[in-house]
Length: 441
Image (cartoon, rainbow, N blue to C red):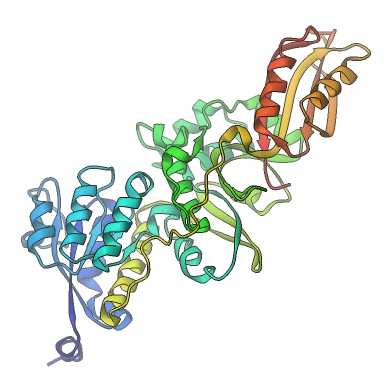
């Protein structure tokens, strides 16, 4: 009898059911099947893979025994006696029903499904709490970057003031290429698709839906309140132009798609996803390629940043396996962490009432008194100017025009939008006022 066999006979066996066998699921299954001894040493029990739900069981899946494959995920959840169910199917349905069924049958859950948690998290957390089981979802926010557990456990004794981060690798790659190689948006997107960073249909990434789901989860964790994806203000990066990139460079900034969640002065939660200018001096400005990074401000711990690969099969599988080991340990000890700690119940502030800095850029008539008129109009809307720069706009084509670029102090969204509307109606402003929010100053 080998040492591994001896150990397995004395250790408790926990049954694991896996829903989904794509890139991440296949890696998780391979880990469970080939690293049994290592996982047993880490978790204190034998983790036995009892089934893998797939769409087509006839397709070859190297390293996974055919007898483990099933096309009936509902039966696997209900009849396998699984102690832990790992959900890697993605989307809303059928994962929602499968997870609720697994919970009802007493299984703890590990998932990477940010869209489901952002939309139906309250229902799932409540079900888990009633049954006394765990919900772990580290892979749902930033791949291998450990951020859920620090917010849920390590920083639980502190007060989180703000969470701000790059949580979508596809958009970060595109914006990075637009900045460093001066590619236009379409070219950068095509490059991302060729390299596998962007899907054939990149809508979820470039329009900010993926980041908005993650922002809802982060805000819920950070502020112990229920925040759903419908609460998140969202803009994507499709409107970012090469001229915007150049304007950011002139302001010594880079453009990033950020998820921002913070407490405002009235104790409400601001939660939003949109492109922002970030000063090059800020740690988030140097996050390049398809990497993710999350920046936290806490009352006592101060400023913390977590950075690394936010997507891909191996990083995501690493986060899933880490959650699996933690859940297994909890099952052995007979304890569980709250699936979702909601005790503050803070309100979410409407986007028009949020406050940040703004970069404004527009063409004006190059004549005396225009700058004073612009400053006066901003002042009427309670928007204070931090800095201003004026330069000629293609003098050979528009000798009578200049470009004004200015950065405001903290200002309310509604006031800035009203100011922009009025500026565009004046006789001295020509064309559209381009604006971008500024964070990290």
